[in-house]
Image (tube, rainbow, N blue to C red; front, side, top):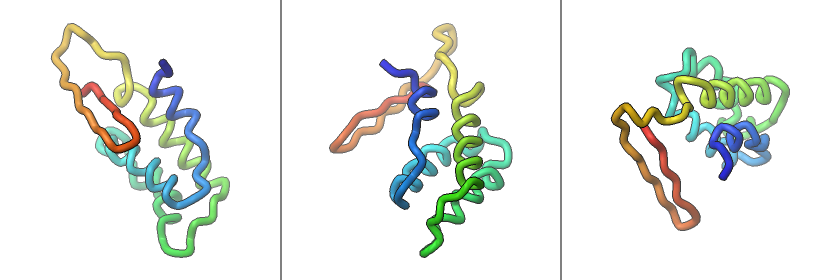
Length: 101
């Protein structure tokens, strides 16, 4: 099984708006843990405007910064089984996901 951090680091650059929305949806879940999330994500959120989806180097840097932010402690780390935690599930017609919090 692949480690979630590996999957996030291997996330491809979005070629369509739907893929960008998917990535931003994932990162927005953790926004309260990422310092200056809005500033970091601004180059990507700007692409969501109608007719503005044009990928450039600034977009790539912003995506890489968000990938790094959500795959490092305290956002993503191994569970400490000596501490209480909860399991959150999410399911769709195509998949199932779970997260320890």
